[in-house]
Image (cartoon, rainbow, N blue to C red; front, side):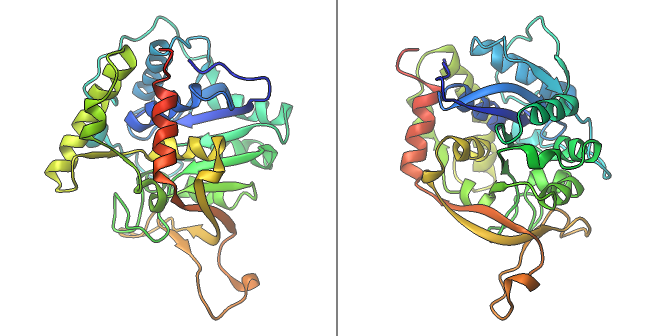
Length: 319
């Protein structure tokens, strides 16, 4: 699964696995456009040790145990850690029961990130689908290192869409708003997949019914089912939004998306506003007076093309 071509784009995937993180890993490894150099883990959906183990489990499931996993930040820069176990389960992967392989992480995520970006300036894309703590720590330890990335594709924030943790904040940015602000202000080339676009595509019950009878198919069914049941209880419909795979798709095929440049910053304080993306869309001002740096934001997606890409890559016909 996921044999790289000679012109594959080298990527580092930074994640907090997490069900949709696992699906993002599956999409990245199933896509010949990408060459996954390593997976970095961070505290987020689940505590760091659980998320790191989950990354190792998913790689073993996919027969890609040779890809290194690097363990990163065990909590946010400044605030108390928050988790999303009500969505992902206490083990982070829903009802699935993957065995933990007999191997350990390959080292420190921040060091790996700095060394890789420094050795290959302008080549490596960072795909960040968890809180941005690892990226902020890398920038703090080696100022300017994020500018050495070819691009940073981030799943996080909400521009015009309501939040999914507070009225205005998405989970990844809420979990570490200080890190999100620092990365947005770092001057690197960022493309954001906010809730505005990730809420446009979801797996439905009909998709589960069509999953192949393979280990990967059974894993996806068992992983997403509890989150779908939670959505039903919240009267949101029986569906599972494909948040994190959207950021991977930005690196694979940006033509799937309608991307706008938005002047934006991240609020770090407030019971209601911490983690909010504040977009300066004022009509009566000039760009030089707008608050926040320019950030590329995916605001819409060709849902049919994206879903076809996603399903064909995580369940290739030769499996």
